[in-house]
Image (cartoon, rainbow, N blue to C red):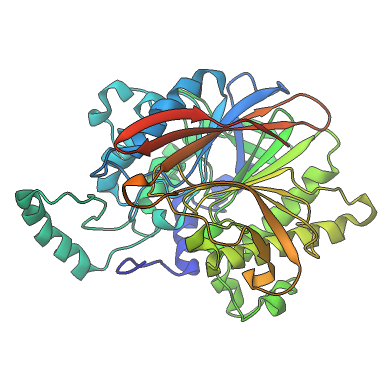
Length: 462
């Protein structure tokens, strides 16, 4: 990302663990599952409900308008009928720094925030949401800024303002401190607590008993923090699993084959890839699939394993996320054996690619075949066009059998002044039933020739 620095995986993992006091004695003694969330809205047992999905949002005001705010205003109209919102990452551009939160997050999403009518008075470390706003980190939420770059930004900024240069103000004097700003904004930042304060906090907020241990209680309008950078919650007898794909999206060898077959990696491999999260996902999926009361499973994370948006078609991080997610799903299918379910998950939601896209895998030779993949990364960041190919082959090459097909794509299209910019978010209606139906409703806020219009696409029923 040019002059921005993406920290090593080991740095991300270790610092995020320290921020939530991962595995601390006080936490373990209470039987707390630090990856479990309980939404205490009094409605989690209902089998029919709706929720919203956005991603790649935090771009802030632009010289040509404010796409993020346009989307946020349309979102607010759906908020009353929807139970919660999932965010697929890249919450704040360009580098997730504290000074970018007011303009790039707090002001745009003021309708979701307690006290949002005075958004200029809110501080990113003390946000409380009226309804659950459930995020996962993206790559931009982790970026750091080298000191010389920060000093250059500081020197140039007054000159830009004096000359009234019409460019976006998405650069910052500093970065995210390897995800610290994101952690303070959205996670239960236990690092700031100690002694009796920590004990009292755990007793008050981790009292919800679940089948995996005591969970962090998310109380809309009162206490709205997440337990960890990856986590699991259950709503309407559906398991929702949010992942941090920024720590398992890096290839560790040329083709991914050697390490992806390793059951227990050793040596330096364990620091180059977040195996703990992948093993956790494997075990959580196995437990979910063995539970007859769970009627569906949804994964959401940042890097899309399958996508045809032009800038991400050959993206190494996306290909690597595909390989590692396959490893998990293959391990789940092997463990279940005769109990193997088809499909293993009902929906996979991601962002990173600046578009909306619905894809479906065909025969991949792995347990990720015949799944529904939805990319929702067109909710505020500058949109991109589709690659010339609408099908995907292994390693996104030109040879071999097709493994996935794009069913619907919405991104930038047109040339010059005739370019269309269809920004988007999703409303997903979950129907009742032992095998739920998902009604995917894309909402479009399009900029064309300096005019904004809103449309709703025909729903997809999956």
